[in-house]
Length: 114
Image (tube, rainbow, N blue to C red):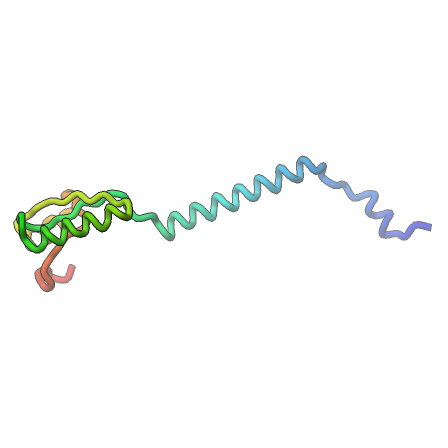
C-alpha cells in the first residue's frame, strides 16, 4: 500500500527544467539590473572632466590649480583651468550656472553664505 502523500505528488505538475532555468535567469537579470540602477542613483560616479577657475597667471590660485590638475590627472580626471581676476571673479563664475565652472578657489568669508 502506497502512502497518501506520495499519491498527491503524482498529481503535482512540475515545470520542465528549461522553463525553470529561463525563469530563474530572467529573475536574476531583473534583480541585478535593479541593484545596478539603485547603486548608480545612490552612489554616482565622479566626473571625468571638470572646469576649475583659478586666478591671474603666476598667482597662488594659479599655482594650486596646476597642482590639482597634475594630481587629478593621475586619477584619470581631466581638469580645464580657467584663469580669472581672482577670488571675487571666481565666486561670480561659480554662482553662475551657465558659466560651466564646477570648482574654484575663493577666499573664506567673501560670499554671503549661499
